[in-house]
Image (tube, rainbow, N blue to C red; front, top):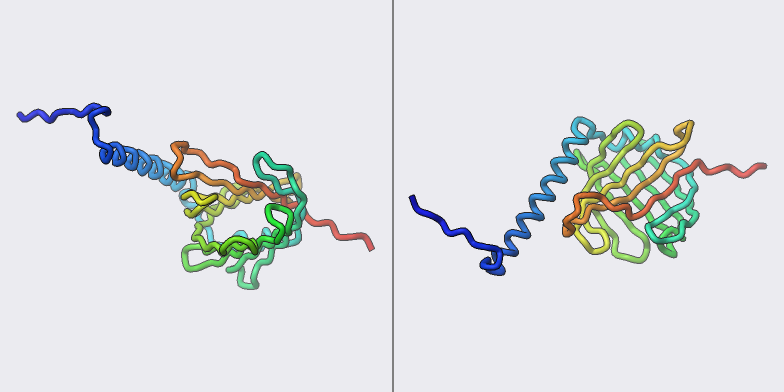
Length: 196
């Protein structure tokens, strides 16, 4: 029987070390994807299941880690066929202009066009999942110019379940961590109508 010599880490060439690191990143990404797919199994839903529930006029604070919360108004419009959902977040949340998040049902996937009036518009593909008291868009793209798995989670809030918390999170694929980091949260509280 032929013996194959075992290389110690110090004996590995640079390309072997890169290959090992790439393989480790691939395995960790695969583990995250398998974990996500197992935890969301049988809960994939079309946009129409969420669209009419979230439509309306909202207000609340928007907060990012290490930044002061700012008050924003959010208008959410659901199309008549419930296959398009548009969020307009007022200025002062992150930019001097408003943000537009336009979700569109495209066959089995949901396409998002994002614009803030400053940066280049972004188009990404998401899948929508439902769990008790929450809806989560999950997709792959870039956050802060880094490859990432992205979660846009909408969690029902309030005693009457009439409010939402919108949590935007990312799991950076170039990071050894297997957890999502919160990028920003936005409160969606019913907007009070002015008294006549």
